[in-house]
Length: 390
Ligand code: TGC
Ligand code: FAD
Image (cartoon, rainbow, N blue to C red; front, side, top):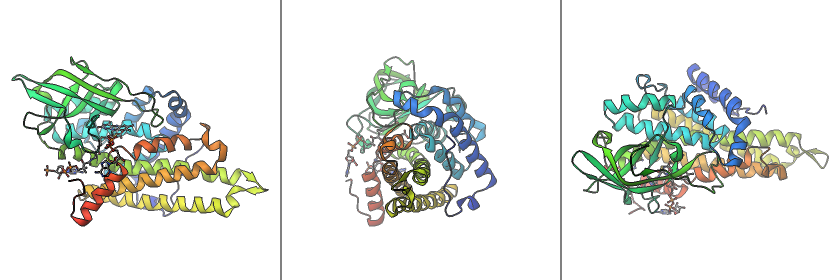
C-alpha cells in the first residue's frame, strides 16, 4: 500500500540539510519497496528476511556514522537517526538488525579495536557480507550486566572463553559476535568470537510474540579458544559495552518515532474513511482526541530526537540525556500503537495493517537496551545524585 505520509507538524524538515533529506528519502523508498510488502508475512512465519541485508547495506544502515575509509557511510548523527526512523516505520525487528550491526558490533570494533581489527572486520560488516551480534545479557544478568559470569582465562598463546549469553539479536546467523566477558581479575573486556570456533554455538530462541521478523538466540561458549588478537584492547570495564549502548539507544529514540508515525498515519487514514453512525469515525470527538494526542506526542519526540542529534554531533550528549530520549520515545510509540489499534476496531488485530505488529514489537523495544524502569532510574540518579541501583 502507498502508505508513509510523514507527519511533520512543526516543519522539522526546515532544520534538515539536503544530505539529511536525501539519506532519509532513500531509506524511505527502500522500506516502502523492499520491506513493507513482505514484512508481515515474515513476522507471521517468525523468519528473518535474509534477502534484505544487501538493501540495508546500500541505504547506509550498517555503520551510518562509521568513516568511509572503513566502509561506513561517513554520515552525521542526524542522518543515522533518520535512517533508523525510516527502517522502524517498516519494522522494529529490521531496525534491530541494523542497530546491532552498526552500534553494537561496528562501533566497538571502531572505537575499542586495533587498526588491524578495523581493517579486517569493518568493511565486511558495512557491506553485510558478515553479520554481527552483541553478547552482553546473560540468563541471570539482564538489567545488571556488571554481574556477568561469562569469563576468559589467559592460556599463554590464546584465551579460553566459557559462559552463555541470552536474548541475542542476530545470533542464529551471525558470522562474528562481540562478546563481553570477565578476565581473571574480574575486569570486563570485549572479545571478537567468530563462527566456526570450536565450542561456540548459537541456538535460536523460539516462541516470541514480539520482533518475530528478527532472529534472536543464545551465544554459548564451551572452552572456546579465542586468539589474543581478537581482544578489543582500547577500553575495558562495564563502561565499554555501555558506551556502545549509548549509540544504539540514541538510534532507538529515532527509530521508535518511525513506528509511531506509521501507526498514526494508518489510524488517521482509516478514521477518515471508516463510516459508522453515518459519518467518518474521525468526526467523533473521542477519535479526534486520540489522533490529536498522537500527533502532539510524535512532534515532541521528534524535537527531542533532533536536539539530541545536534548534541551528539557536537559530542556533547550525555548518557542520561540519551536514556531520557530512549525511554520517552519508545513509551510514546507503544502508547500510540495501542490507541491506533483501537481506532481500527477489529481490523486492527489483523495482519492486513501494520499496527498490531508494531505494538507487539515495541514490547521488546521498551525492554531491551535498558528497560523503561532502568532509564527512569538513570534520570533519577542524574538529577538527584543518589544511586538507586546500589
Ligand atoms: P555503573 O557503576 O553506573 O557504571 C559502570 C561504569 O560504566 C560507566 N557508564 C557508562 N559509560 C558509558 N555509557 C553509559 N551509558 C554508561 N553508564 C555507566 C560508569 O561511568 C562506570 O565507569 P567506571 O569507569 O567508573 O567503571 O554501573 P552499574 O553496574 O551500577 O549499572 C548501571 C546501569 C544499571 C545503568 C547499567 O548497567 C545499565 O544500563 N543496565 C541496562 C542493561 C542494558 O541496557 N542491556 C542491554 C543489552 S544489549 C541489548 O539489549 C541489545 S537489543 C539490540 C537490538 O536488537 O536493538
Ligand atoms: P530483568 O533485568 O530481570 O528485569 C525484569 C524487570 O525488573 C524489568 O521490568 C526491570 O525494569 C525490573 N528491574 C530490574 N532491575 C531493577 C531495579 N534496579 N529497579 C527497578 N526495577 C528493576 N541483550 C544483548 O546483550 N544483546 C542483544 O542483542 C539483545 N537483544 C534482545 C532482543 C530481544 C527481542 C529482547 C527481548 C532482549 C534482547 N536483549 C539483548 C536483552 C535485553 O537487553 C534484556 O532483556 C534487558 O536488558 C532486560 O533484562 P532481563 O530481560 O533479564 O530483565
